[in-house]
Length: 331
Image 1: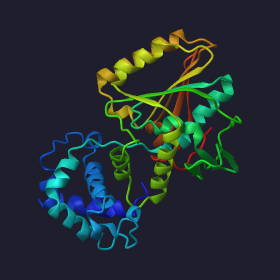
Image 2 (image 1 turned 90 degrees about the horizontal axis):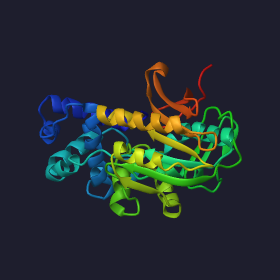
Image 3 (image 1 turned 90 degrees about the vertical axis):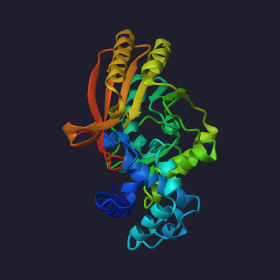
């Protein structure tokens, strides 16, 4: 995913773990039956990155561009392993924390769906994000987008997603109105706190400084654009939100790289809530389900949009996992 530094460190960490070295000793207490869902490798990297960002691993920081480092991968493994050995107790507590991210770059493919809905219905959007983390993507229309010869969004935005569109959305309304911003997450993050901001920063790849700049820009937008993220499971939260229809607005239920983490009971409840609300949707109060997830049919990631009344479903964009290289669907 575009991180030579992490590719190098994770390869060496895997070798160390296989040989029963310090990495294996650190991670052994954690039961990771589903390596992707448990995100144990990412939790390891985030834990070490956190120590770098707070100034507790200065030798490794020299290799981490997010901390101003310029030395690159050469010698980074030795410095990384020293941190694992010397700060094993501290890292054990940090690795135990769940992986939590909020990648604002994913707004670039999601915007294809949001902009189409705004243009199609001519109504303000009511945003309901499941697995919202800190709710940064609930402010999508306050970010700057561009590529394919066009630009959209406030030019002064501190979140610059320019260049992530390889081709523009087919519909570009002059502006999008948002009348409600709500989300849910089992472990929401409060970016009004230093701890919340550090948690999200630590989860980024340490050699991808543009992602860090976008994230910090999103912190600034969040400070002035309110959005409510409740601590709740989607199967409890979504039916409650959808029961309160909002005539005159388009309700958009959406998520990004969340669906794979649903348990089967949660997934069934999620679909049941959408089907019930979809059956009740009207032209005056339409409903949409927008998601950016892995899609085998496109051999990658795609933004898919389902709309009611009618239940029409189609892919509106494809992109890289973090929202880069966005294109419209191939015809």
